[in-house]
Image (cartoon, rainbow, N blue to C red; front, side, top):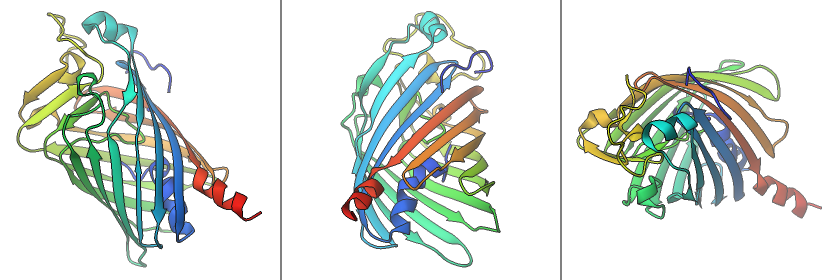
Length: 293
């Protein structure tokens, strides 16, 4: 996206991704109702995601939630001209998350097990047509305003993140790693940076959200482009889904209810620059406040 950055969206404990979880943990137990609107923009186009999450926090350690995302894919004029990319709207995969959180003076730990059902349209790249599982483990420790963190996960798909709503979906075993830090600049402001690595193993299948038919002969962007830029479905070795890069972001949290985020992700493997935005609304907190009156 060094050529074009239009509109406004790594792996992360990025605040927007965990804001609902943090709110639930702060209130120990109760109803979880969280709405997120995420967007990613790069030279390939814009991918937007509306995600409603509903669940219940049993206590400060355990919670369960689920949701059904809706995608809005808008290819750029460049991508449309090169490979005939088309716009897509539709639901993604319904998901359920089981979460365990344990605060500790030495290091905080959180584990999330996510399972999805293939409710999205496979031909539009919104699903793999198969159930998927992701197990992510998060570690962090705060030193005054600075909080270093690390994420280690195992899955049979490469998932979206708050900083990268991906223009593709994958099926195949992957290990995903991330390390970075967040810094609290003020009560309502924070910033963060991280590096990530996605290391696949075995056969991989990549489903494009941008391309419905194979590009006849046009090479697309060239260089380090991904197969999802020119091919609707590709099956091959681990190299198809491999990725690595880094990201920067800033968050603004005016209240327990609202969260705003802007970010940038550089995929080194795909030579792709992505600008992101995110808005989160903790509707569960609103409902609890209304009940208190």
